[in-house]
Amino acid sequence: MSPHEHRATMADIAIAAGVSRTTVSFVLNDRPDSRIPEATRARVLQAAKELDYRPQGTARLAHPRPSSALGVVTDIVTGPHASSIIRGMQDAALREGMPLLLIPTTGRAEDDRRAVASLLEHRVGAILHARAGCVQVAMPAEARGTPTVLVNCQDSAGEHPSVRPDEEAIARLEADALLTGEHRDIGVIEVSGADVGAQPRRDGYRASFARAGIDWGSAAIAVGYGTIQGGYRAAGQLLEANPWMTAILCGNNRMAIGTYDAVRERGLRVRDDVAIIGIDDEDLAPAQLRPGLTCVALPFEEMGRVGVERLAAMLRGESVPTQTLLPGRLVRRASI
Image 1 (cartoon, rainbow, N blue to C red):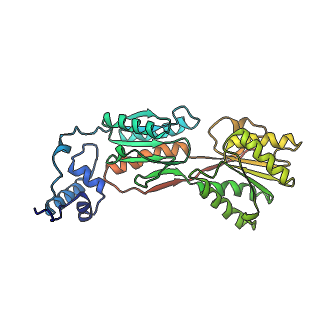
Image 2: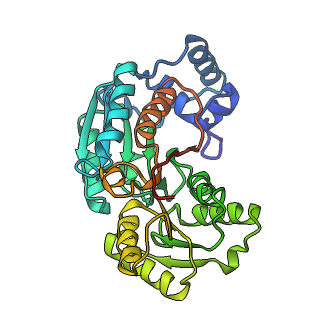
Image 3: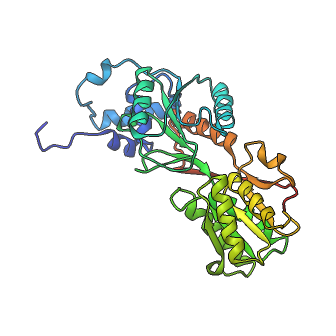
């Protein structure tokens, strides 16, 4: 072969065989955990033969084969959502016959890199990266070449599929719960403007407000930074500036707890004077508050389950969506 002659690549084989590059990699490296149909395997091998594919060296062939274990990198081992997400992963992994190996991380880039490196040293066949907050994640370069799915977060480079809440649909569900109750003077307390879900939630609120004939541009909005104290301060600001307000949308339940305090401090009654609704039903607070807090439950367990199912599909050589958005569920209590 001359220096200028094109050498066939895995991408060429993928195009010729009509499969993904990941499938080609699994077939040519004879991964035992891939579970690729024989017809697909034969098609890839035939395309490789016709294209006269030759690997770049033989070092890769000397590497030990990865196992069928599924590695999990997460910063939510002890967080409020951990049990639900991990339960969803565990149930799906058991059905798929894939043992789980969990490595905790703080979410800092260097800790993520070390966690991924540790999983690869254990020769896991695939990686799930799960985060407590729906944020952009820069996946370590070491993860390239290993099937990876992000859960409750998004790959900043767009290289790996993600499974996340449908923030826009969740915001519509939250807003509609108040608007169908004929509230029109509604305040909004956002978590922040920096997380992945901030703009989709605004889009959801805007759509619901527009259907109710309310101009989103005139909406009263404050930021509570996701904390009880932040929710208390934000609710106080909204109520001081808009004493006629009859309802408040909160971006999470911690801020809703602070909103309860701000409402009562002004001699007002939750629901009768100011309706309150939140997002996230994972802790005990929504049911223990009086009146009980109406909220939109996020799909934590389902995210864990679907994340594993997406990885299992990738290991079978199937294509999976770049992003999978899951809906929330309205849990109606007495606060609206």
